[in-house]
Length: 411
Image 1 (cartoon, rainbow, N blue to C red):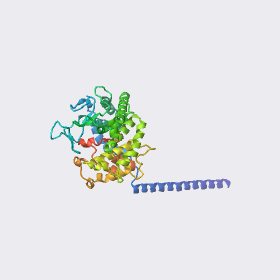
Image 2 (image 1 turned 60 degrees about the vertical axis):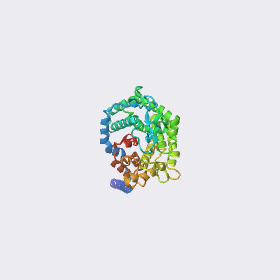
Image 3 (image 1 turned 120 degrees about the vertical axis):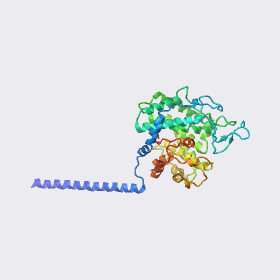
Image 4 (image 1 turned 180 degrees about the horizontal axis):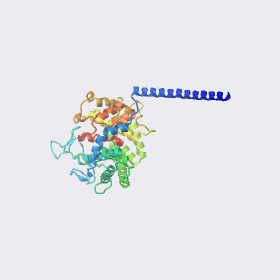
């Protein structure tokens, strides 16, 4: 009889264990169901942003990369303006809103705020934007396909701009946004190099590739180290840093991007502190708007541009230990508030409560980086959906010029 009792006890124990496991499984199952339901109710279910962005942009990226594969390098040495006080290797551009004086063609130019003079020299600016387009497309295509040919082609252009002594650009902007009869260059011209940001971001995205040329990468980093030195010590750079509108934002954004590329942690910390103590509290109003941009003749375009720049800055600088997306001032100003303020006017431009821009009103909005970066930072699916629907390949030069981040895959 003893053996029967032992068997019964064994079976009873095993059944108890089985029932306990079943109860635990049911509890876990219901917990999972409730979490899913709660997630669906709040609209915060997990999204694979890289997959969504890649799927949205794949066709366009591969088309743009096919074009980029056929392009030969064009640097500042390809064109020169007789009005430039600089040499063959110096970047030169002219103030957009300055025009010949109708009284006399020999007089200093006069200003028409918001009205772009089509007669200005823009060849260097267009060459830089073209370079940015090429690099962004090639790096994005590499990210999607892993094909080394895109890296090889990108290196050809980087070598021409930063390494080859016959074609490279001098690492300064002494002659940018000049004004005939008034200035051979201005600090305000530093905003022209925002298009170098996707160049360094592209190199970062490809730097571990088998086809990467260490000498070219080192040469590019050396170039940007020298450019950072100029940006942070020359009076033009100091003037631009202290600008109280989008120019000040773009100085910090560029310095942050180039400092991250070159591993300059001192400048990265400086940029982070400047965002927290200067840019956000001084440029953003309590409602999330940018008053300095709203008072311009193109308030819509400038507001979009400055928000793009600030969110890109948060993207560059944020870490687990220092999350600028979560940062807010004592009175509640934050990046989230800035996006929440402007988003309704992007989803429906007809709701814009201010005057229309004097130029390019009909060309905005496009697929702004603040939508996709903000969506990922705050889990806002509607922002991502709006970004997906907008134009990802604008063709108007002024729009491209004011949209330096066009390839979110490499960010």
